[in-house]
Picture 1 (tube, rainbow, N blue to C red):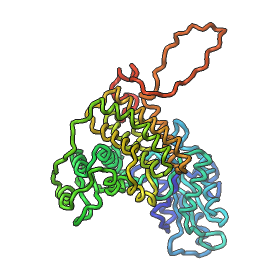
Picture 2 (picture 1 turned 90 degrees about the vertical axis):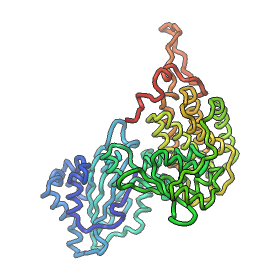
Picture 3 (picture 1 turned 60 degrees about the vertical axis):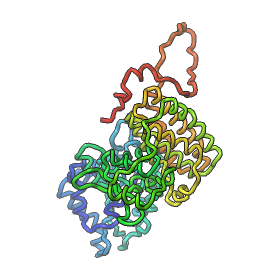
Picture 4 (picture 1 turned 180 degrees about the horizontal axis):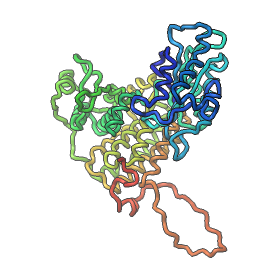
Length: 505
């Protein structure tokens, strides 16, 4: 559950204007069947006395007047505004299976719980919750409109309201077993903005931020030096430049080619994609200030020393066999939660390299969850850069680099690499609780494992029964053997490396 105070926390002063917008079509016709699901006076809920009236201009005018009645009656005029507007949204993963929205009755219960938690009912504030349906991102959501005037002629206390909303969201997530949202400073560094979503919706492709996040993370996984990283980004038609404009390069920003490009700093795509974090993982990160200037600011093509055509299948096979046990040993020996997050980060890079060869929907969804779970809190991310590289961490980084450098990943090798990722995820899940990893990250890891296990490589082919049991004999109980690397099934090899069932269209 996500609670967001609209308009960057500033309050409005036009109740009728906000209601007119919320009951209208929206800026891009995204408002679907707007109606009231809960209010301070239940007569305004759809199906009750005034519910249908609120969906027409005259009824909305009366609703606005009643919402403002206490303020006008007490002759209040708060300089910071009196309209408090909050958006509550639920991601598609937490909606009932096959549904795009929660039932109105459940939204009513949630909103009444939120109003009570914020103390708005005790103060006698007047409020209404308008249900819009799925947003551009697919989140089911409602808009809570509150007049901050209280019954006794005060303005309700909303100091540190964001903290109280966070507490309520956590309570609801635990109660309903919904996906937990990360605390401040964790998860992906910045959410996709509304203008980005609108541009992506019109073009019918992912947002610039999401596309650049994937391109940059794959370039980071597939290179081992700053020169190779920048060169690969430019080969992928990514516009890249260093920051600041003069002196040593300490950061960078990227954009997709466009007449009016949208620029993103590496750290805003993902915190671990900042230039200091990338330099900490590259063995060949030290280049002179003069070379930095040529590489990042002039667009010069510099020679790359460690390029090669790609690993042999034997080398890749040996790395696949070696990495999961080494990662398991490292996580058992080192209880530091920072190592756990860094292994998750490298696993996300490995999965991103696999997606280049097999862009299956389940792999993409698993990768999205892993990148969220991988993020360290801001306070500990700097300490992680100074730690010496662990053997298991280095091996998984090398495996991601080998997979990214492979020109063609054979179906048999694809099976082994995906199973290796599954083994690493299983180790991360086993070691997460003892390291006190936040619940949000553990839930995201569970969702990633669920998507990965739905990939055709991980789904065993049903075997035909060969026994001839009599009707009177009970069937023997089914036993599931532990998952072990195996050659791909005939069904998987018969299809293309990209499953038709999960192709991203």
